[in-house]
Image 1 (cartoon, one colour):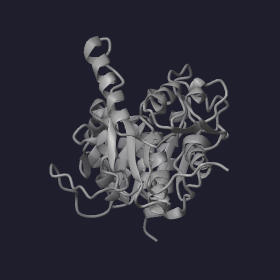
Image 2: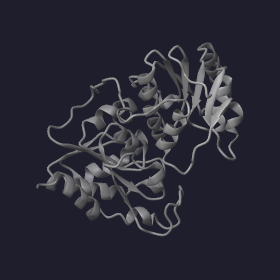
Image 3: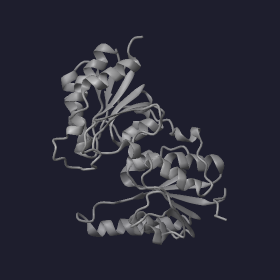
Image 4: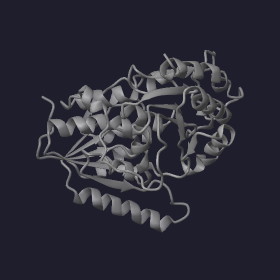
Length: 341
């Protein structure tokens, strides 16, 4: 019989990145805490995502990991890795649940010293050598489904209420939200090929403001602030441009204030879905069946062209798949949902 986690155990969740992957692991953490309220849950996470993980109601502590910096400061980088391993071992974890399933996460799972190390059995991925308990899942399924099935192998049962992320209340002090109905735009994305043109977001913002009577809030990281400037500059009145002006830990509050989110395939897309918001997602080179917003209430736009999904970060067809999603089509869909009866 497979071993089970007990209420007295100390459990390390191994999911360093990315934002979307972290969000997909939240339901399992919440399910574990619901079933075993006294279990101690830590989360191994990249430094840049630690502020978000620390806001989760059901996470007791986090262990930060530094991924970059060896080239600029080799000695400092090595020291940071040593400190991380010392921290992991000092916590005396009973379990490590590796939801990342890569060599690095498997290696740190082993270095933690936890006697029970559980993870994916992937084909052609050496992570499995570091676990002593394994399970196999279909890599072609949605990322959240894979994570849930991994958890089910340990008797962690995810129910619908676990799919809604629970964060500690934190209201940002640096800005006020406009009065009225809000819709959030996320024009960024880690790959350029995932981005719907910023000018399209600007045209859509004008429609939302003028025809639907809603406010548009633009979000994005500091390196994506220019996208917010494009939307604000072209749409003008009615746009609240927060791109580059907020931090990751502000996102749950901002998204929770919205009625819906229009977004590229990105981390904020998954976070919005996890907060129960209706998501209008624009997909180009990636596959929404594997990484789309989880749930049936969302709307996914994708071009019907033969080269997608290609999963390419550089496009040799002038990003045809994104440009073929017209502003008119997205606007009409928003009108049907939010427009006058």
